[in-house]
Amino acid sequence: MRLKIRLAAFLLICLMLGPTAASAQNDIKDNEFNPVNTGVTTLSIAPDARGSALGNLGAATDPDANSQFWNPSKYAFAYSEAALSLSYTPWLRKIVNDIFLANLSGYWKLGQGDNQALSASLRYFSLGEVTLSTEDFNNVQTINPYEMAFDLGYSRKLSESFSMGVVLRYILSDLSYEGTSDNEVGNTAASAFSVDISGYHVAYPMIGRNECQFSWGFDISNVGTKVSYDNGENYAFLPTNLRLGANFMFPLADFNTLAFGLDLNKLMVPTKPRERDYDMSTTEGQDKYYAALDEWKTMSPITGIFKSFSDAPNGFKEELQEINVSVGAEYAYNQQFFVRLGYNYENANKGGRSYFGFGAGFSLNVVQLDASYMLATAQSSPLDQTLRFTLTFDMDGLRDLLGKRRR
Image 1 (cartoon, rainbow, N blue to C red):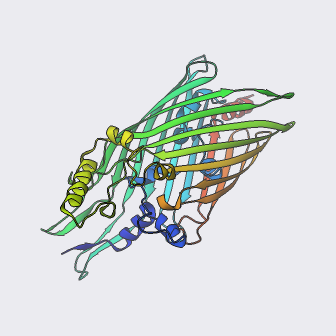
Image 2: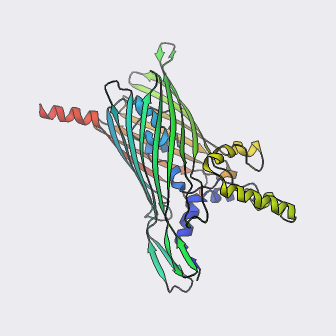
């Protein structure tokens, strides 16, 4: 019997092909809608409230405890000796109430020169409880699918103004279920290893009488092995991503600053060939399609990275459509109160997951609380009204507080 994954299929469509809702509203032609598909798509979800409030931006913003996701090389320029952050995101809460993303990340500065740091993060994405059944409901399973990743990073200043970092990551995607008959094999858990490479540069130009801060950075993330959910029959690429960003901060008055940031993102994953792009009415067209599909299936991740810049069916125009744009602004008062606003744009042909981000933060000597709210441009988007919460503990502040109490 064929196993029907009722709720699971719906959730995976929302997670991986959720942009179709937005594209339908925009009346996108079927032959123009061509998103890049990957495995373990939850790796691309921003874990923290600050970055999501800025419109999914963070390649060149000031370092914080969550820089592991955005640009780990920023840790070398962190102001505090160590920090730990916990983030929580109820996901698709307009539809279900038991899907969430939890993320724990932090860093620790090494040595006496204040020029290097170790970092780590653990993210866990739960798809809640899912009931699977056969067509006649004689065999029912209840599973709890999830995806998680654990990584370790090292960053170091190579000069007074430039640093680089590297991250090693282990990924586990457990969407497995048991088959209901001899003809139904079921799904298996998938695992992979990946690496991130990043860089960060900061300068302090003088504009008039004001000392400003300009920074730029890059992060190439999730360069690693493919994943398979069917014992190696088929493989999916990891969401390998190139992030480029710049940030400019200037003082408004005493204790008041305003920063503007821009991030550009592109998935470095080859586009899967489609039948509609070939003349399937002819033998020659069919041969070309199956040859291209076989090449895509057997392509190595490294080859796929280079192929991703030149494989769009509609040429350079479609390649530009694969670039996501994030812009954001952050106002800070005395580094204790923060207000944030951002916008993330994704072309409708590549998903249309565009949204506004809003957020605020409050910081004391020891702890900082940040919250963000996502407002999707398409009302039918399952990502609309997403909330995120982040709690960060500053170890320097905690040490100072404990020292004062001992006195």
